[in-house]
Length: 112
Image (cartoon, rainbow, N blue to C red; front, side):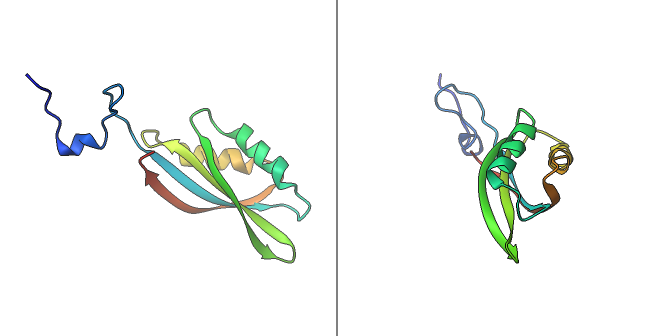
């Protein structure tokens, strides 16, 4: 007797342990610093320290705004089965003193 696996479940099947694997959600934020003198390396460290245990930084980028001011683009990855975390993430980011404003750029699902 074999195990029947539907085509729909193949995408969620972990072939190593036989467990279902859920995807993740990646949220991209544009983070505006309070001043042009804000050190982005220090800001990145504070962002990483402020994240809940289930969230991780997926990547960083920089975008020139005007007159020497750059915005930090930060992608944060969370499990897709968590609910109500977008508000929590934004509140945690807004409490960092070097951040003037945050803007959500994109929310997308990823399978890894």
